[in-house]
Length: 111
Image (cartoon, rainbow, N blue to C red; front, side, top):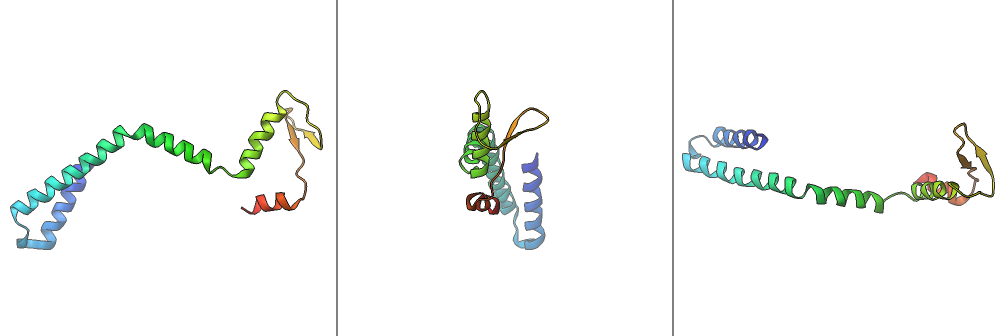
């Protein structure tokens, strides 16, 4: 349906802009071309949507920020093991590490 609307709009625009130079055969030719391109777009979207989801998820994982990864690692180490160092307990009972004012922590907050 969207492909048909787009195709008709483009063909109508070409008819208006070109006037009498846009023959009936040219109009049919552009319609056929745009049908083919629209069909290819729909085919790719339907057939490869699962692959695109996998690519998107793996790209998000690969480009995660260092701070996000450290948070995940911190959560993994706090579950089931005791943690040494400066910690505080939150209302939910989770442990949080104190962030020390170091050049590395400043570097992470800038990016």
